[in-house]
Each structure stands twice: as C-alpha cells, then as structure tokens.
Amino acid sequence: MNRQDLSGGNNLDPWYDSYAARTAGLAASEVRALFAVASRPEVVSLAGGMPFVSALPKERLDDTLARVMRDRGPVALQYGSGQGDPVLREQILEVMALEGIHGSADDVVVTTGSQHALELITKLFVDPGDVVLAEGPSYVTAMVVFRSFQADIRHAAMDEHGLIPDALRAKIAELKTAGKRIKFLYTIPTFSNPAGVTLSWERRVEILEICRSEGILVLEDNPYGLLYFDAPPPNAMRSLDDEGVVYLGTFSKTLAPGFRVGWALAPHAIREKLILANEAAILSPSSFNQLVISDYLATTDWRGQIDTFRGVYRERRDAMLQALDDYLPDLEWTVPNGGFYVWLSLPRDLDSKAMLPRAVTELVAYTPGTAFYADGQGADRIRLSFCYPTPEFIREGIRRLAKVVNGERDLVDTFAGTGSLELPRLDQDAVFIPPTNLA
Image (cartoon, rainbow, N blue to C red; front, side, top):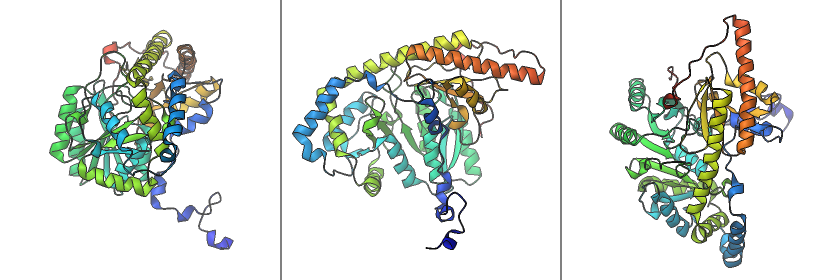
C-alpha cells in the first residue's frame, strides 16, 4: 500500500477514516487517566476503587495455587466450557444465596470479570441509538461500554435512598413520548459507585414493578453487596424477579480483581445467547483462574475473609468521614454503610474537573463528578475512594484536598468580590442532595 492510500487519515493515525463508527464511543475514562498520576508514591490517591488485597491470606492462596497445579494442572491449563466450570457455578449459587438469590447453576455464565458480562449484555441488546437508562450518577466504565455500542445514555435521579421511582417513571414517559427505544435499566442498587448509597427495599419493589409494567429489563450490577459495615443491606433485586433481572456478580471485590472472574445470572433465553456471545468473544473464560477460585471457596473460610474485608473498609470509611468532618465541615457528603466510596459535594462555584490539576500539585488525587454522568453533569461533585489507602494516608489526603478546596474558594471570593462563601452545615441524614437539572 502506498502513502496516498492513507491520505484520508489524520496526522497522528493514518487509519482514522477506516475505523468503525462505534469506535467514536471509545475514550479513556477520567478514572483511567488518573492512574498514571495516582500511582506515584508521593500522591495520596483517593481516586481508584482498588481492593486492599494485602488483607488476603497469602499462605492459603499459595497453597491453593500449588494444589490446583499439582492435582488438576492439565485441566487448569486447557480450554474450558464457554459457560464456565460447573463446580464453580454451583459455588456461585452459595455466594448469591447470602443476598437472597436462589437460582440454577444452569443459568450462571462465568465471564472475565463482571465488566465482561456487562459488555456482553450490551452487545446482545443495544443497537445504535437505543436508550440505556442509568441512575445518575452511574459507574463510569459502564458508560464507556454503553457508548462503545452507540447507546443513548439517559439518567434518572437518585437521592440518599437510591434511584427515585418517580424520577424513573417521568424519564420513561419522556422517552416514550419522544419515540425512543429503552433496552434496559442499569443500576448498582447496593453501595452504589460512585454515590455509596443503597436503594431501599420499598424502592426495589417499586422499581421492579415499574420496569415490569413497561417491559424494561433490569441489569443489576452488584460488586459490593457483601461488603457492608453495620446492618446487611436489603436482598438483591434479583431475589424478587428471576425473569426480568440479569444479575452481575464478581470475585474482584470479595477476593481479588487479578483473577478476572465474574458472572451473570440470567433468564434462560438470555443465558443461551450469553453463552454464545461469550464463546464468540473469548472462546472460554480462564480454566486456571476458575479452578483456583473454586478451590479457594472449597478449602478456605471465605465468609470469614469477607468479614475481614468489612472490618478493613469500615475502619477506612470512618477515617475518611472523620477527616472530612475535621477539615471540610461545611461541605456535604454521603455516609455509606458499605462499599468503597464517599460522594462529596462542592460549593456550586467550584468545578471538580478544573480543580484536579491543582489537587495533583498538592499530591492528592480524586475522581471528578463529571466522570459519572453521560451528559456533563457532576462538576460540583467528587468521588472519594477509601478502600486502598491506610487510615493515616486517608486523613492526610483529605487534609491536602481541603487545602485545594479552600484555595479555590479564596480564588472565587477574590475574583467575584462577593466575600466568603457561606455554606450551611447539613444534618448527616440529608448529606446527599441530588442535582436538580437531571436530563
């Protein structure tokens, strides 16, 4: 091929004009872009949701790895089923039973992390221009997936009790009036990412009824449900509806993300297509990783290990809340009962994305709120992750963040000439106030 054949490209990529239209939705998320900076040792990263894998029993994992290779090496290193290992699928039922889910191992499809399951479901259902409903704010990489299939992402509002049923009804009515096709509702109802809030039981029932009456599939993503701190959360939405809900689970948060093993529990007909899509994408999930996890579940007190994680993350959550109370007492934030995240509200005159470079110079990183909306909202929000840093580093990170926030407020005061910003202190029962301009 001569150079003239590439003249339709741009200066940086000669193949630019050859890409499929859907690649326009492939862009680095703001979370991914932060990792290079946040990984520097001098930076306190409150950005990424990385599990604290150092809390795992290393010696027992060493034994598991050795046992799998010694006893089942030829199987572990071979191709496997496109649906996943049958024994592991039975064990996954035991994990889901802790959240009230009862199903059949035949309806479980093992995937390369739940992110892969999310992509497969989107691939099966979404044509260009189809609507995916998502709570606002929503998981940043889910929106990357939806955009990659040219979905039209629309948000429905949340409050401190999760997705608001009336907001969902209004959004569905608006979209139907506009002649839009809604393919599914994507939700993280338990310890949501990024807001950290949990959908109440009453709302779970009501939202399922709304979706059932409108013929809308529910895609329930549940990475954090077992990582509660005080009282257990309500049972999963899938426990109430085995035909209208596809449930996504993962071992990334309760074991380790490096194994890249997740699953989908789907109605029978969807399950069949999921297996075919799984085989088309990867042929089969890793046999080795599945057998390691299966052996771990069979020989280790995995429930006790989850309880250990709860204690680790509870201590870090408490450290973050105390530091926020000490250094930024006039701002608002969520108080999660589990998971990894606190959702911080800034004064409306501040922009979390514009403020990030200054934060990095102060050696603290966070994720701007705009990363969690498809429509540009969230400039006055910040996601703070407490799962990875030690309590001491969390406190130092919040101290540095407070220096940045207060510096930005001083700039606003100086250039606006309005004097200091008077922000009322909110009651802790009302720390999460959703934006009022959700589209």
